[in-house]
Image 1 (cartoon, each protein chain N blue to C red):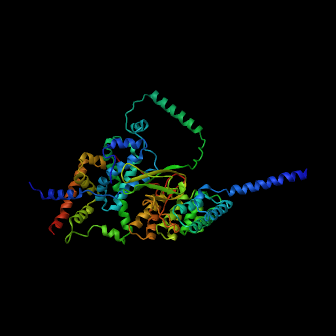
Image 2: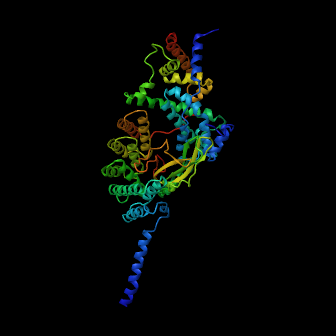
Length: 185
Length: 186
Length: 210
């Protein structure tokens, strides 16, 4: 799918949206959909929840666009909204999983019971990531996958830098412990 | 120096950094939701003032200044209580709704429904920003409307992001949009 | 004097009656799109609805939809007739003060299989404009939810839920059905969850922190 205004800056698009050009918001959505969707997918573990949370984040961002003080950093600002929505989305997904224990679709996407036997690397990584505590998974993804600085992570999450460093360290240790066995197979 | 833990984490990170394709239909769903919302507008002077007000400030006040402020507040409270005229209930009125369809291979699309007499010439959709995104804006008063997209003059398409309009009569798929008395859509 | 009065008033009255009837039967130019065989039957149904003080616009739109979709005349007439009957039943259930929009939504719910009793109960528990609750009921059934389950869920929520809550409830059910949940179970679960949220107060909708 082509994007006509690929050369137009985020700030310019935000300004157009604020004057009533909702079509410009479609460009922003298209621009950030996959990038933010990657974080939501890894954070929540399945596509349906990730898309729901992503859609919610885009709508909330539109609603509060007047509060985006620095339109040049629209992406980072939107990211903060998404991180917050992923926390709520994760809780909702957990409630739903408890309701439909016989849902075959849910069982197909559930983490593996354990790293015994041969497993594809993708399945293994997803399994390990899903087993991390939420805060550790969030910190790991922001640091190592999205490659943010700790100062930016602190702004997005509201957590202190020391706490974030501890969460990343714990995540690394847990992933290493879980995947050490899987690597041997 | 080779650090096996770093190497493993690096492999995981590289794996998770692979591009992810989210369903482009999400764009249409987002746009459909935001059309019911007011234009967000810019950071107004009022907004900046509000944020200034919410921040902590240190204020020094003399006793006389304090008394004057209290008196002014009492006047404001007294005057506000004098005006008790209830405002009239708002009338139901039309609001603009934007319909969105993602159809990268279409050459022309019409929005057709109860709101335009099912006239396929009345509301042609236009491309909005991207090759695949088609939109049209229609004013809708509270009510329930059947509609569908007519693609390239011959193919009827229901709105994938809207409820289905149950219809055993005409065969072609349709969707439903409901506008409540408060103006929200479903 | 009396004869003069009769010679003046009676023709005048007759002319007024004829003019009134002609106005009622004035052809909606939009219905020119129907073929010559179909138009009179649809016009008769529209006139009948008008005399019964039912909204006629939904009937006209139903006919126009059929014309645009190239349905045959008898299919169009049957569809319009069915809608007219549903509108009448909706008015019986919702009361004579029901708005045209409520009657349309009510007709959709009846067409989906809801009973007049359900509509009357909905009016009783909620009172205010019922467009959205009725639409949610019809949409749930269209999604495959058994009508009894849909009716029970909407009635249980209608007392306290706002229109936006009912819309959210419908979306939650459709999402769960898409994920493979049985429609009735999805409806019951979403109604329970929504009921908890409604009872706890409206959810705060705050934007994320930048």
